[in-house]
Length: 358
Image (cartoon, one colour):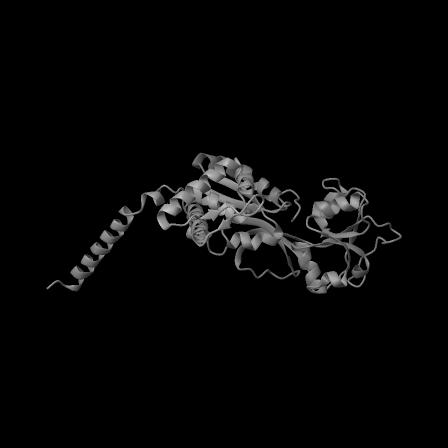
């Protein structure tokens, strides 16, 4: 009688034969469907119409409609139901139950394939993606010249992605970037507790930029009790919103005299320099200095320092982040480690020019 090993081997052979038979039995109509067609279907689902999908894809509307027609023909032959149905001029398309299932499968397939490609590129070291905020790109520019020749010789592609401070952790956790340079709020004199590998570069405080007159706001330190009475351009999210939230609570807009919500620093600076609004903008010391020196919009604004009575005491910590332990899985000459080590060797006081934390 066959032993257990023989039975297992027979079962594996039978399973392999079933898989092969299933693959060979795929309907021709299904095999004619391309990944490009699936992406088009998913984009139409997300945008609602062929016209908006064509605009998003950079194609002619007729090209998008032709792909939808071909998918509908294939689906009708396969399952007896189209995937998407026109609702009339100006109305969003209607997706049938079959269409909804195919869209879900298309999204899953395309995202899974893309993630697999990124993982393979990271593993073999052919691509490294570095994320920077608007004001930390100079850090990468300081170390890149020493790495450029080696990366180009080895065919390593360095991708640079703009990351907002509010999105640092999401981008890193989602493996959209491999390293990121950014900032966060921390208490002075205390090492940060992070679930990431972190290379600290510098710390600094925050300050106010204002177009108020010296009579309205004298050149003296602004304490925690004084700030709520000042007209303030408040950030909607991000690093400086963390400061206000920890000082005045999550509902800090109800405590402070907010005259405008701003989504970007440059927008706030332009509001003040154009005299459209008269008030104060909370920013970093380096940004304040750069604005006064003309390296950013803000000439003519005054810098006002904050007092020491804010609780908790906070400062801005800027540095390089990587997923915890990921670098240890790669060889020392892997591009990810080479880039990290270049930052580690480049002490800010000696190598890196004054940059603006974002």
